[in-house]
Each structure stands twice: as structure tokens, then as C-alpha cells.
Image (cartoon, rainbow, N blue to C red; front, side, top):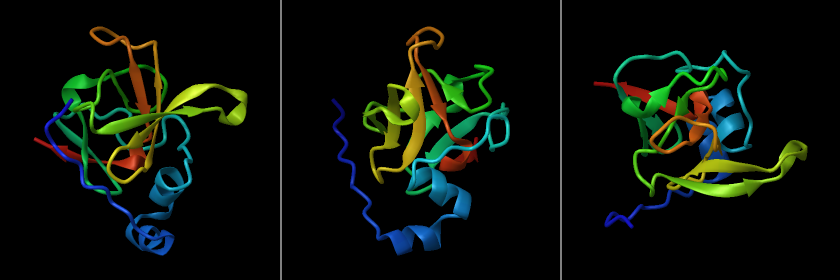
Length: 135
């Protein structure tokens, strides 16, 4: 358990629409997805930090990013346990684990148990749900 306290971000639908691009809004607020190999960052190899595009919460370090071949940015671990929350997703006739930003509840993507060591997990994240901060 982390000693940090995450301050929740709550905005109206109108406030989210004014802040986010249409693509960010569709993904973060409506649980949409971008087409594989089309969003930002799926092939980014720069060192840096990936933050939530909705609230700027630090989510993933480039050190945990790997090429999964799926067409979306993939990571084997979030920056901290407190950065994301997991929810059961039964949409589209599948059972998956959805990943949301713990601060603003924005939809990020899904996590799957087919990633590399050390976690064996693949956090498959929509590029438009994040912003990248190079180091």
C-alpha cells in the first residue's frame, strides 16, 4: 500500500469535452479504443514518462514498455499500484480486465496475462489516453 493519497478529479461531461480532443474524449470518457498501429506511442522508443491525458497522473515509465506486436503501447507494470484501477469488462462478448486511471477514472485500456517477466502482464493502453514526457 502506498503512503500517497490520490486526489480524485471529478469534472462534468462538458468540462471533459472542453479539455480533451474528440479522440481523447471518446477513449477516456466513453471507453473507446483507437485502431491498432494508428495511435501515438505504440512505436515510441524514447525514454520518459507516460501520463494520463485527462488528469496528468503519472502512469507508466518507458523502462516498462515493450513491443508486444499488438499495435498499442504495452507495459509490463504501471508506475505504482495506485496509478491504475482494474475493473471486470464483459463488453463485446469477452471477459477482460479493464484499466482505468485511479485519479480521473478515465478508460486507458486492458491488462492481459501474456506479458514478459518480471510480471507476466501486458498493460495494453490506448496512446490517445496518455501524454508522453521525454527525459
